[in-house]
Image (tube, rainbow, N blue to C red; front, top):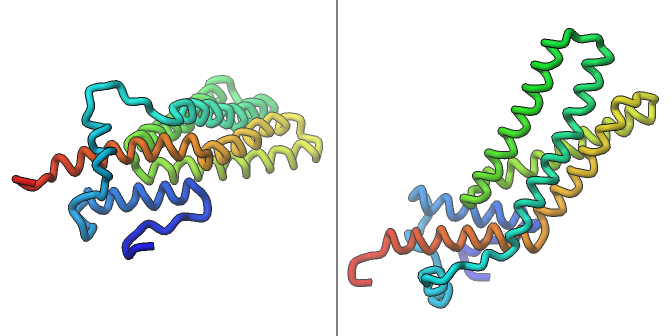
Length: 196
């Protein structure tokens, strides 16, 4: 492997994070180079007028659905617990709204950043998967102890596993790498030296 090359991560999503971080370093002017090594045929492909076929285009939609399933696994136990605790309806509604809004805003921000080939978005989804897995496992343990309200947290456990699988799927890797390559090509054209 040549000097300065990206070392592959333990998981595919970790490799994507490293690649996106390298891109961000160059864009911010903190990298040693001012151009990306993009093969000529790839550069010509992105400069054509024909519609681009985005690989793995289904994977972000599946990731979004899995993340929303996890939100359900978090929101439903909160809803049941507020009902069992005899919380006043206005306060319970506020808690449900805040729980849902925070989760939807988190997922929306993560997806927006991933589509722009930002490493932070991938890190946010990794954190979401870990949170859903932990929440779901705690809910299943509580359900085994007799808490029926916690049983709905099993949705979060399933969703966390799905999110993690999708983050490390070949389709999602291709989709993120496609958007990263597009941005690299655009960066090279914007910083092309005269006469090059």
